[in-house]
Length: 259
Ligand code: SAH
Image (cartoon, rainbow, N blue to C red; front, top):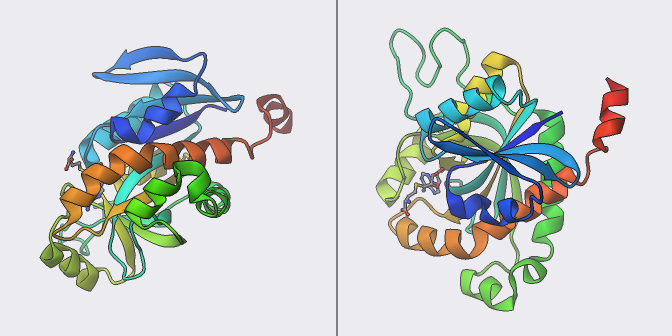
């Protein structure tokens, strides 16, 4: 089975692409789809670009053109819930588009004609990602070095599971993030792609999961935190999380026998 690994920005996927020994580049719709192997598993890795439409297009190409049988989104997000700090990891259980509102015709946040506002992530993949994340976060010094851990205050990072919200907006003011917290009190973090990919995967009946490292607190300091964090930390986190998860899967020949 081919697993698709998607991130929005180059820095989020750079370390992972460097680990794919045999990748072939296939260019579709201006994006490079890297087809190859990681941990012996067939994968296709791609940068979706930023935002919901870019992510939905990329997901559709992955499913229709590359026959991806699961999509995992990785990258960074802004922390919303009080205990979700820079350097923590969020594994989504459900995903919602916080900027979608067709009320009063449909309830706020509901994707018209689907009956859903909150799209579920695949439980088995998400459980496995959360377990790997706990192991990765237990040794941030080993992964990033002492200096980066001190600079970013990553001494005791945590894994959180719950609602991830997406919208076409980089949330970078305290006013915006507190408005989101009021409207969606159980939202752990905010980003710009995940819920769009969850909707596409739901329509195709393909499992989806999202794992995001918190790069900022979606407040007035978000931009400064974000730029530094993504370039120093995010890429290595994404590699460790995805590589660690792929290593837990049975080898491809055993998967074939099981089906
Ligand atoms: N390149 C721009 C901003 C990128 S947009 C810059 O340097 O400022 C932010 C990207 O990271 C998106 O892909 C989004 O999914 C994620 N993200 C991280 N923090 C976010 C936040 N506070 N609000 C929205 N998206 C965020």
